[in-house]
Image 1 (cartoon, rainbow over the protein chains, first blue to last red):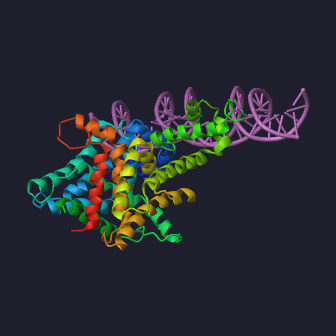
Image 2 (image 1 turned 90 degrees about the vertical axis):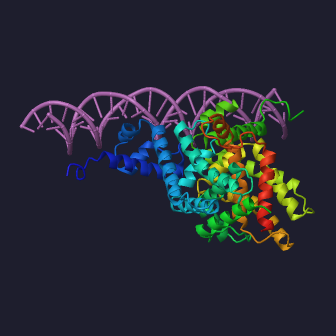
Image 3 (image 1 turned 30 degrees about the vertical axis):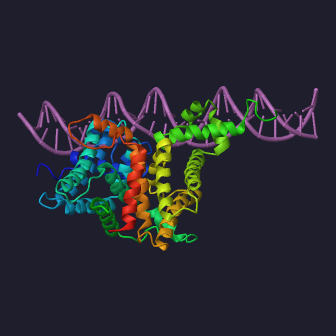
Length: 212
Length: 212
DNA sequence: CTTTTAATTAACTGGTTAGTTAATTGTATA
DNA sequence: TATACAATTAACTAACCAGTTAATTAAAAG
């Protein structure tokens, strides 16, 4: 028992910092997150953050890297190369949707990062984000090569997919509020399940790719 | 000449604060924007900000209200009620796209606001955002009533439209950077014109609404 | 048991933050 | 020209910020 029982557990402390940082960065944003507050949330001394992550930016990068790897893994695990391009596309969209819904910090962090023009985004983060798009783009290309998809603009379709799914997740409280104010009758999908939305997005994208 | 020439111009000062605040809030975010920095950018004393807008939040609300009214006006001016639902939809999307492109603070501010779950969004802002969606939703409904559009989920389609257009604008520098690194061949639309993208989004949404 | 090393802490720093206050300036009006 | 009022300012505050330091604790290694 050289590992588990001691109160001092470096990996546990590090993990705790990242987990609480995910919550804070996703709700308050980078500038709005205080390292004092974070350390209190973790029950650790503030100096620990700088001991493990050098500075606030280093922690933020670790957080982003973590969540980008999570979603990338979640999707690649579900997509087996044997499947048809059509099924792969469906899997991509539905996996992204349900993951985003059960891990709402993902849409929040992603939209915040992408709203910044991200021009100062560190190389490694940039690469991770591009990998996710490459996955999507490859599916479209494969379908095109096989003759089942029309020629398309993958970047735009990708943004239509993740844009809509991310916004659906982040605006959930807003849309419920809108539904309660019934001065104007608006269908805000406040009661919709994420599965229904992912399915709708999927059939829309397929309708586009199958052509008129 | 009782009005124009004096150095003290309340409305000019107020306008200057809002304009510079738009730039700062859209690039640095709410928490990342300093009132000291803003006042220096305007060449005015910091106390002027609080004199005219009470506090930082009040200024932020004024900024958001301003840009939401701008885009709402831009769209409603172009949409005349005589046109068909199909043309109105096209006008909505293309006007939004070109406005977002020529006023990139709009996508930045909107995505930032919407990534926050916006649960604390003040009533009036909430209303302004809903008005824009109501415009879009009404067009779909009209088309549906006239039998030219299929039944749809307007909220999801709206997010597909503004999600993709906003992201295309905010990620422009990112996508150009991606194009320069040619280790992976990825079509990132780095050279695309906004007109082509708006047109592509329009035909996609129409393909969805016209049905298979 | 002792030494070494890694994990953790309290206390501090210098700079920045939003917001306040009281005095001052300029302008329109009586 | 005096007065009243709106616009503007310098100087201030108290809280908060990211980040540092040097000392302390606990566990692993010898």
